[in-house]
Length: 135
Image (cartoon, rainbow, N blue to C red; front, side, top):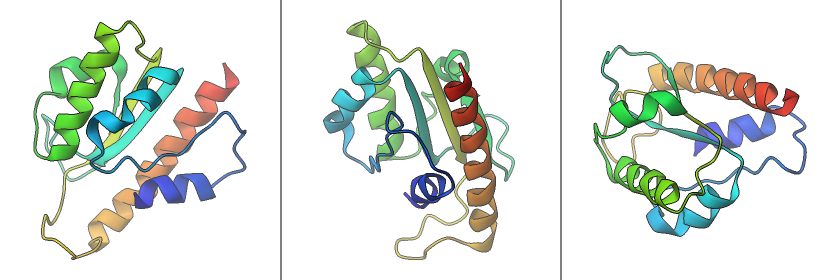
């Protein structure tokens, strides 16, 4: 949620760019997923490479990756993407930006490493948004 707020605050985005903190809302996000032309998701992830850095996966890379689940967030995201595909309403562009979690304890806040990752995630998000808006 912090990266979504930081990305939103990082620019003067047009009205057609919506920022939603989906948390663990699961199927309640279906309308958002089905009604958008392009979808960017930020989350903690466990990538195949598993290096402590920020990853950016494009739509064509998601099927092989998305089923490596580590949290309720990913289960909801995976199922939502499957549903929108079945409904024929999949966004033309989908990007997942995330980093491996450093500490899964509750109420710990962001570690210094994750704060650094947050800045990189916002930078990647800005690049993707600018790319999409230029098209």
